[in-house]
Amino acid sequence: MLRILHMARKEFIQVFQDRRMVAILFVAPVLQLFLFGYAITTDVRNIDLGVMDLDDSSASRELTRAVLNSGYFVFAGQLDGDEAIAGALVHGDADVVLVVPHGFGNDLARGQTATVQVLLDGSESNSANLAVGYLGKILLSYGDVALERRAALLSARLGGRPLSLPIVNAETRYRFNPELKSSWFMVPGVLGMIMMIITMLMTSLAITREREIGTMEQLIVTPIQPWQLLAGKMLPFALIGLVDVTLILLAAMGHFGLPLRGSLALLYLAAGVFLFTTLGLGLFISTISHTQQQAMFTSILIMMPAVLLSGFMFPIDNMPRSIQYLTYANPLRYFLIIVRNVILKGCGWNVLAPQFGMLFLLGLILFALASLRFRKTIQ
Image (cartoon, rainbow, N blue to C red; front, side, top):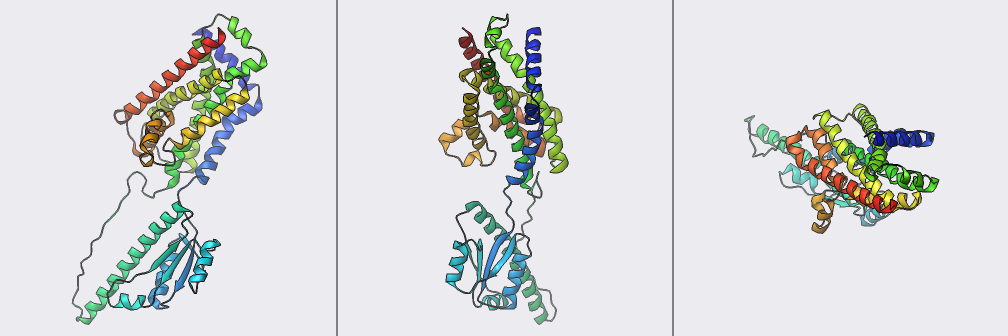
């Protein structure tokens, strides 16, 4: 144990001698949290809405006002024909075009189904789907108001006798994220992504740096086992990673209002086990690379698929079955499940034990591979 601590002390001194490295380790993670927390979002606002009102009635104008007052759409202008609609969509002047046909107001007044046409720019499929969802809710709400008005009108014609119309009303409530804030979904994922990038990248440079500065031979002749040397190199970055976790959590809860409904101790335990896997992966990359440039390039090649196949942005269930099998070897997948369930749902060990088990198993495998590979190297 004393040998591991001496190696860790050496690594600490080597890391903190470079002031730029200190900034990368402690300042960059918080800056990345704010950057990704705001930039990576599924919320869509300020959708440019073009309108072609062929009815020009009070009902059609009221519908347009209801859509614009929702806060999701901004008025992009009145359109007067099919060519104008096509031009607006092609040139990006409008993302959505609402076409109100002739007779819209009369159909509503007679209690009949009134139809409108919605044309969208499908080149941005995610934005288009969200715009359709927003419009659907607005039109449903507008239809309920029109139905209530007609019921009141018929009641007045019947001498004030109350009239009940068959209405099915569904009350929808969202658990764990009532306001559907995308930052509450994204920020826990950003936490895992930043931890993986920082710790894996830094440790992947550990062995290659020794080779480049010419101190590898000194380490070889010291009375230390390969696993002790690797553990000593992992320990400083593990402590640095836990400090980064604390900084990111403070920023996430203080600025983004992220709740912490579960156990803080369980969250730190998950961070420790996850760091064990990322540091082991970084050390393994370090043992198979000859230069720091190779180590950095290999780390980037691994990080991109790991982030994309973790469920950070895209649901794993929507991926092809063959790709879903690959995600079982991705430690970031399990960590994101743990973090989101602890922070947003307040889940405990009894629910998350399988994810902890898989994380620890992957960490053991990666550390064992790094130790075996390093043993071959020093021989």
